[in-house]
Length: 483
Ligand code: CS2
Image 1: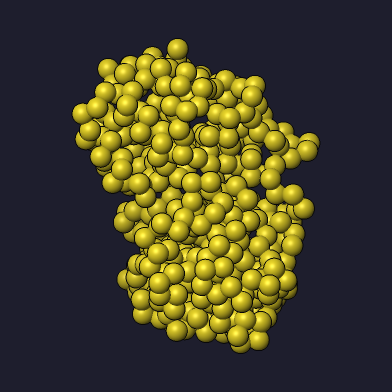
Image 2: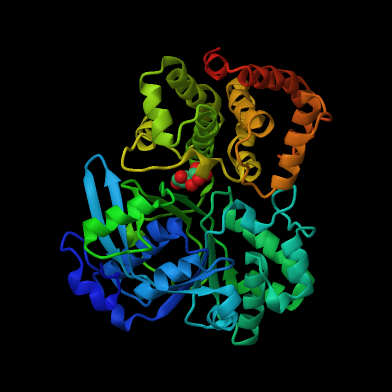
């Protein structure tokens, strides 16, 4: 079968919605760091729709900081890919043209630098995952002990981290005309772009301090809340996509029908008409972030660790099992209702109960094969964002959340499941240690930034966590959730 590309478009199935603007004349306006599946199903699509709606030269050049995989998927296809959304109301297929090219840092650093400095580039967006921001223990400052940051500070022109690459690009931009720039983080961190700006300032202070006054004046960092479930694609799903569209598409994405993008309305210069494409521009992003991270992502992570322990492959497998499994269903419902929702600051007039009910349906979407192992990744980063705020809130049921935390602890301490986490070495050492369980739990909590011995609330919780963890170890996970 032929590969999707500009030249093979005549063979594309007519069931695929085509591009609705002149792609041949498109110029680059955006650089995106981390052009993985999530970016392709979200910001690239909003940008594509914004150009169809209101025009503009907002072609995106993606940059992969480490791997060459995405470049190999997209460049032979002239940046083209197809998106399939699977919803109860039906399936939709569309061709997306906003991504023009993917650069790989190791091969095309100069081209990336040129684009970061170019006045025509007015926006930089990022999806580099939580760990990609190299934040210190307080979640706001730069982790200067991070090996990537140490490397980058020693060799700023050869930076490898997102922060270092961006800082060097900003330094060149200042030298080459100082055009204003909007930088938007699209990762699952509360106040994401503000944290990015803080880390970047720390870094610039050490490498290019002359950039700081210009940064304060001409570079804006609107926070953004992004929401769309986009599982990593399997080989079978790619084969199915080929059958559906009539061409081989190595960069296809499969996602749900639901999609939301909330962006703080503060830009340094022009941006695409994302609002025309359905994004919501707001003054205060925090209630939206609190809702998304504190409810969707928080319950997602709970499902992931419980799913791993129950040997379920996907979120839908867990949630579908829930339908016939009263203790599990009532645990998830209670987790949301009693532990998570009371800890949220929701947008005014928002129907949070309806959102929670819709979430369980989104998780059960049979068209998505979202693996528990994918969501379980990077737990030490995600749990900080997703569970710790609710565990610090005053008037909610903490014990329900401690049971989810016990599931994570049990995965680390009492299973041989693989651990994919930026603190993997520490976690494996704790797993292998022959200290008693309270000691090991204390060390585990420390990987989340919790000093359990010095915090009275956590001293008490340690006992509860230990009890739940032991019960899970003894095969009583369902009983723990039902208790
Ligand atoms: C998930 C998120 O992988 C994960 O950790 O919880 O990617 C989730 O699917 C998205 O945030 C949904 O918007």
